Image (cartoon, rainbow, N blue to C red; front, top):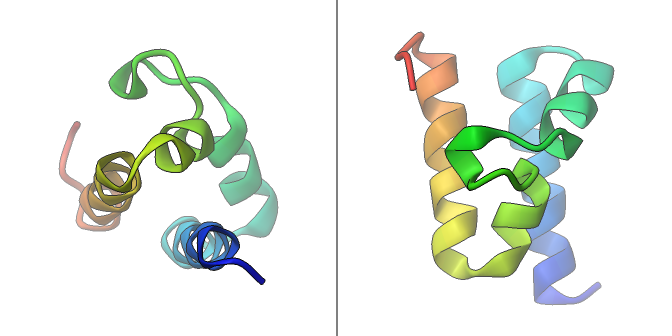
Length: 68
């Protein structure tokens, strides 16, 4: 497994943990969103290290009920 594959796996695990449902997490990660410049969270995360960090930050905001 490449380091990038490991990051995407970690992202999926985090999304499932926060959203508490695999299907919901999969849908959220693969749906384009304005907050990610009309990319899906997974596309945004794959684009750069900063994009990955931002998607993880947004998941943290969701977890804590912070409106983004």
